[in-house]
Image (cartoon, rainbow, N blue to C red; front, side, top):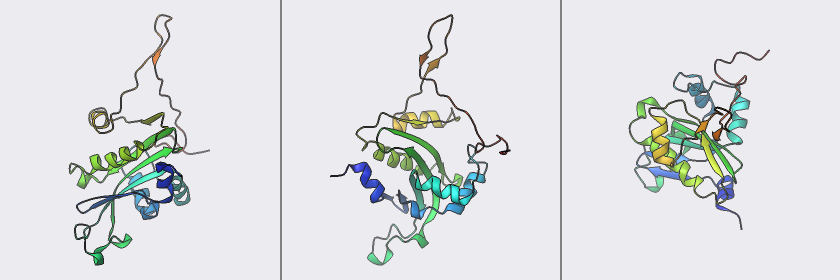
Length: 193
């Protein structure tokens, strides 16, 4: 008997809401469109990468594509979902071992569709999958958007800020230390020698 999370690797999960669809099926993700988003100013935390590298990244991640499907509201058999009717409008990616750890990144909805609740729905779908992981120790994310993202993730995913107070007056530090080392794939880092 396999676990629910190993099932998501074999059988993609799909959610529908009106004319919109969220799917974990990575074959639906248009790589060139995603790379164009990575190159845009709205996707400020990433930059585009070679197509093969992006494909490998997608295949090695748990991805959630958000699509507009105008025929979705018509449930007749002849109007089933097909790749040709889907417009890629949002994305979320989880780096995970599918058991104990999950890192949420690259959450994005086209600016023209923001404010419609689609980002909340997308992240709620991610959270639904997270909650099926019985041995998960922690899920993490990083954001530099204190005004919008921190309250959003606190509300939608019950995320908490990891407090770290550095050592003071010889006392030990308190809380987790979130550390980073930027490298060649980070925006504004420079080119590889």
